Length: 491
Image (cartoon, rainbow, N blue to C red; front, side, top):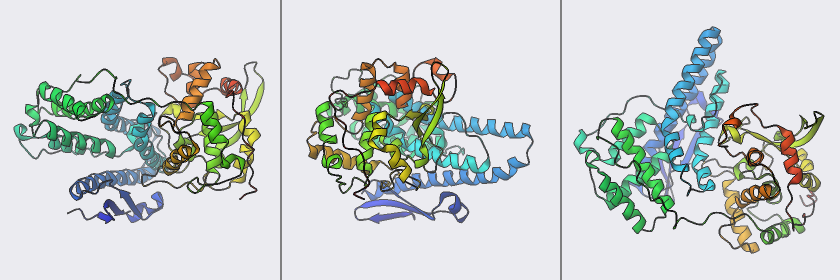
């Protein structure tokens, strides 16, 4: 029996009391999280997995707290050793998540927006571990976005002999030993259910390449896109690779099996065109100071404009604090000292997270945003968030609910192409930067894209401001008229 399982309406949730010694660290006495299912049997499984994840996370926080006192009295040599071992442990623990992630995202048919949704859990989990590191005085390792989930190193025990093990058994063992993100486990469980439905209850040791190919064909016949089919096959390969490592089968029969061609992949997101921009920025939000229900007050005015002029992800903008807007000195190309207003995308504040090291960045604020009153607005906010009326969803994503509102809102305005979404601002900036002759490296530095260039790995942590300032000065949306400047007169 799963004692932490509760039901609200037709949906199931896990509810756990936070241990007393961690309440002050987490800032809450109870955790409730949606399990995203109305099926009780599935809810029980997810509840147990989430319980394991919470226990591991809390153990990590306790360990960090205890380490604070131990490290204080340690010699510098011992301190360095502790840091190194912790980094190595976290790196090993992150390996399974990274393996699955990179095998998935390297597929050219997978959209950037899909990749970023996959990363969300890792980014939020990283914030928890950073809090523990800060408490303990331990420097976190360099960019390892998946390493944030606490892991359990106890080897998994198999419930069956080798010849009788099924895919769910392999997933259970893999999840207990490797402790991947909860979302990754859910993907694996869905994969196993589909495999059983389409191929049958084949023991892991008996799975052959013909079974995997039949599974692929059945997925496509059921209406799955090529992208989703390859995603499922990648997950299957990850689990079977683990089973092979454990000696449960001679080789990984799923390795290399994929659809390949992308003829039936869903259409890519489109950048907003001028007609769509005129509908959005000519709406009553910008002409009549309207603040629609669901638009979270001034977020309805500023978030679309910020996305238009920064290309930032919605979650990056939603988590901004007033302190992230500041005047920053820099050296221009002639060596003269100058300053500009910048937005800082960071994971240093409470509840803030980034996806990768390249996501941490400074963005020069475009002159149009300054003319519209963004600096005045930012300086008028004194709380922890620049947009205090935004409400987080059950997974803690501060921009998710607003994003759903935005999607419905622009459809009502007349932006009817389903390929145009909030992320279209990001695509528009990338496209317009190319038209303006901005190099891909500078454009990537503005949007926080990971670069394939080895050279980008060297140098200072943050990209120099001078080329970013120049790029922003060249960035113009031709055919678009600025909306009315922001005013707090309607508040």
